[in-house]
Image (cartoon, rainbow, N blue to C red; front, side, top):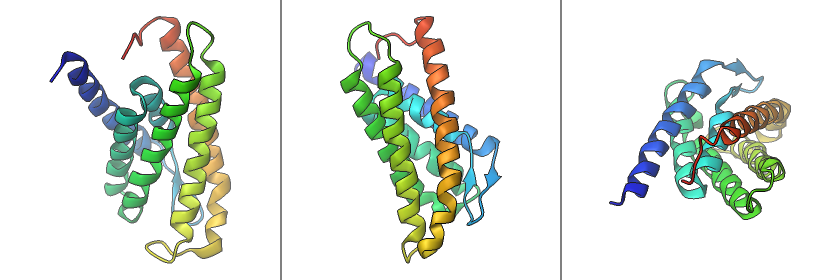
Length: 172
């Protein structure tokens, strides 16, 4: 295994742990059984720092671990939703981030795409007949997921810009 791959694997493990901790640190319950948390900050950061593949794996696994420790009904959906969220955000960020230009437009566009996937993905998971089975009542969680998405995007964008400004991210 090359040093670069080993470095990405270690960072992906650390991002998975960070995602789990931020997801579990503050939980504000939503009306239909889910909760608002800070995990999206780490999900988006993992996508932007590690790229779509490693970032998606770290985001999905870390988020799923947090659900296994408190909301196991959501664990399978979370693995898929957060993994796809980071995969899409990391892919779009890599496509839009060109040269030494400001990363802000790429952060905003990729973060919005990722958060849209999160909101839509959880709606579909909760509305499906199995395992949650809320039907159209799952729409009651959409505003809470939008709040979580906005907080996650603002937090992740701010942290990324601070780290990038200090040249702490380097080339992964």
